[in-house]
Length: 164
Length: 420
Image 1: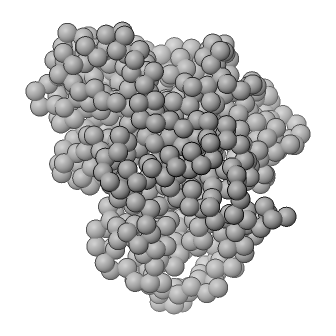
Image 2 (image 1 turned 90 degrees about the horizontal axis):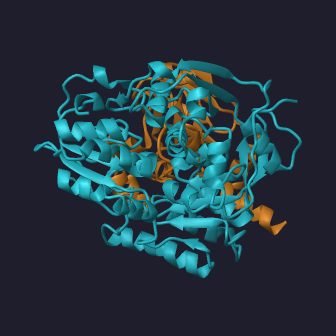
Image 3 (image 1 turned 180 degrees about the horizontal axis):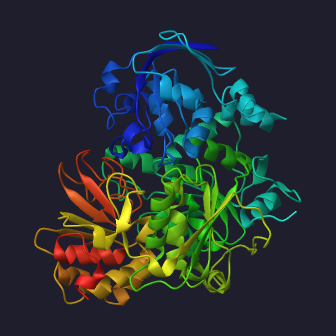
């Protein structure tokens, strides 16, 4: 699957409170969560983000809470993928489980500027910056997690296992 | 092959002789939990799997503790989903308001989690139970849903970092200060994807309440779990309390660690983490003149008996500063009752503080202690991210209960030495 989009850049240690503040967690409706996505990091983000856009961030993206509402809000806002230097581990797991593509690519996360146009090959992890012409390779995903993606997320994966 | 305590627990639950860091395993879970924010999503995902029953009705708990007592209609609806699911599946451990507590204070207290267990919870501070010598880690709602159906979860075996705290603690220094000091040293991603094992003389002498505080904040360094080898203090805590059989594991003396940090605990002062990350910690003596509007004592980090006693020792016969709101949140109903019996509430109320029923409310900016724009709080909670306790332009400082109580009296951030 090839993803294409324009980038929005954030710094390091973007926490789950910044991605979706707790004051909105009295609901788990994806559309409602999307309306407040990244609000405490950039109040204008929910209005300016367009379907297919990508988030670029520094180290430890998604640190803090286990709230799955964080990747759900990002996905529901139309963001096609997140590229960061590193991800916090619970966020990393949650993103795979709900089918939000994420890529650990330190060099790409450092180089890519806000507004650059990218294409990302979700299966190979090859990132092409169409604005600069540079190509990057994201850290490969373990085969087991590729199986989860291939099954369409953890619930489908478990559902198939329960039938066996 | 020698193994760390974390590796031994994971191996035992994966049915293997040994495991090595980096390996992906399927592990049996002993207990799973979720709360009124994470359970509604987990229940929805569970229902998509298409199974009729949960894996074990005695090993799942849904604790409505975040927005409860229900703060508005939407939260009431979320909490109701927990109640309905618990009734439908006849879950043994459902805790209604009045019997409920902050999950990570409640579960160890009720003997639902114990040494050698493997526990996952849809709450990042599930790592708290490492204090009992268990492997416990936070996951999201979908992982929790899968575990409710299967009774197992997949895990990557983490590398272990050892934190050795030599020496004896200074007065008014506790688990909170040790963990804030370590996070200040290694940073909020200093233990990313890794196990944090706490050892040394200071840990051996640390109370169970102090150990729970330390392991609670492993996630604030990015850690997968925090863990302390069980000993006589652990035995005294779990005996007669744990509802299931438990097992003590120890790291082998020649176990392989990714890294070892050595600290002289006798040199560590009470710490304060400045906004907006737990890693911005410094000794309270270097805090400078920081005036405050609110003090929060409680949460899954520092809402236990020892914490309330410590705050009461300082607040006894004193008054809360005229510019300050002091709010105290006991972790559970049992702690609430004990504090009441010991006369601690009288001390708090006479000092001019408010005492609340257990809730996670203020810690995550949910309810019961929200900050307005420009307001500043010092809290015994675990996070000081932007907007954590309210307006994105408010500030949260983290500290132990003694520093929080002293600050309440003086109206500015200060160490206990100033009022003792």
